[in-house]
Structure formats: C-alpha cells, structure tokens
Image 1 (cartoon, helix red, strand yellow):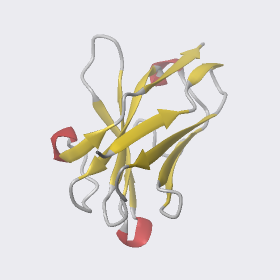
Image 2 (cartoon, helix red, strand yellow):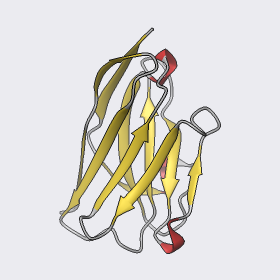
Image 3 (cartoon, one colour):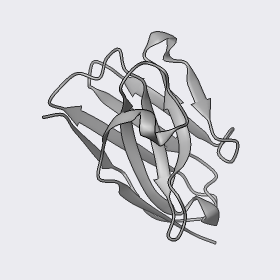
Image 4 (cartoon, one colour):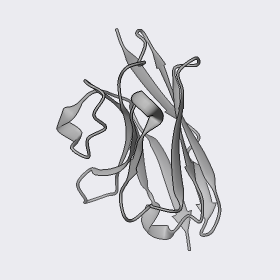
Length: 124
C-alpha cells in the first residue's frame, strides 16, 4: 500500500522559513511527478508546486514563485518544499501528492496518492 507522509509544518512569523518533507513508502515514486497542494479554511485545495522525475522540471503557482522551492531525492523517496519569506496568506494545510504519470499537473484530480497533510500557520 503506497503511503505519503508530510512533516515539517508549524507556526511561524511572517518572513520566516519552513521546509516541508514528504516521505513515500510502499512503492517507489521514481518516474512519477510529485506535487504540493494546500488548502486554507473555507477555500478549495490549490496547486502550489510540482516536480517531474525527468529532468526534475519544476512548476509553481504564481503566488509562491520566487519564494518556494520544490525538490526531490529519489534515493530517499522524499520530496521537499522549501518555503521562504512566508506570508499570512500562506497559512493552510499542505498536502503532498504523487502524479499517476510524470506530468506535474496543476490539477489535483491527476494525482494518484495523497498524504494526510501538515499544518502551516503564519502570523503577521
């Protein structure tokens, strides 16, 4: 049974940094794109960033471009999200997801496996 587990969330001040990790088990996620999404209270889940396996090509939502960096370590079956210059509007539950292919889509329905999420709270 494939499983994704996020960690690294917490409560920080605006301008601080956090690094989220997503560990995969049960199967290798090599050859699959990985993504990060987030959901704030009362809002729909939204795309944050994705990274393909082939070439480690990355993509970002405009709202986080230049502040967040997604990376992957396939030897550790782990994906990271480095979040710098955090803002109050970044507060949400952050989810890691595995694409069924190596596309790195912005659409959540194209992702096959999901973690349980980790809370990020940014105080202004």
